[in-house]
Length: 350
Image 1 (cartoon, helix red, strand yellow):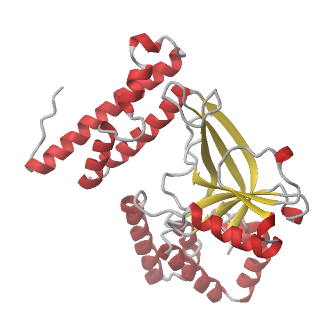
Image 2 (spheres, helix red, strand yellow):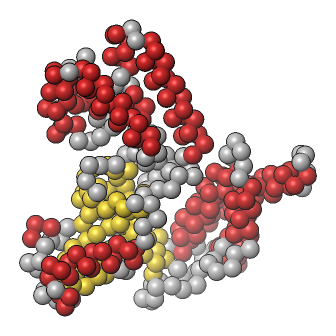
């Protein structure tokens, strides 16, 4: 049935090369056992809300049931697929995602083969940076002693030359799955739990050495990590295969923030059933910003005629285009809000 061996599960896991003997053994010994294990796998993936992986699992069963002419089982499979795709439509962007952390190990003679290496760890939902830091500190303190372990919680590049060779340093950084690369090409569906191997974290800075400054001074360094395998994986950590660093100037920072705000607003406005509570919070946060710099601050700093000439024209033009789209979705959001209050069509001023 599956002469290609473990290649048939390549869309589900990147571990197909090391699983080939196992799969061939199972198929040779008992097809019933294989079917039983695949059905259990589909159920567990559904319970874990890894809906993107479930269709590829069920597709392994379809040829077997078709060969057996087991139409009842085929009906069950397609019914399950229908339910999975329905959940993907309604729950993709509302699922709580796992927490991911970059762990970098520094220290001469402390970590053996893992020295100077970086890993991405997958942790349960809502796991905080402090919790992970305390766990790693306890782990390595019990191994090296309390005076020989230091936790680095900032995301700045580590200068190895200034480190004490007698100390074991562990740098821990919260990272987020990357859905688009720097060219805007989509890597995975936002909120996806399958094929996650690109991550990013940001480090704010200013040209004069401060961490934070005014909007006109604020820059940030965006570090993109690619792991050697994809999550979900049989191990909770995967080595970092490559690292790419992008420095963003003040206008590029504004563009990046506006793209994020625009995407969040689009997701809310384009849902079949708009969540009015979330929409109201997003509208208030977009217009009445209390803490961080918001759209109005960016507009005054980079789009006013007196300031726009100081910055590259293509970046200013892109930022202006993002603002036009953003305002359009704001009007649409206010229209949805008015409709929900009045129970009828909203009139939106032009």
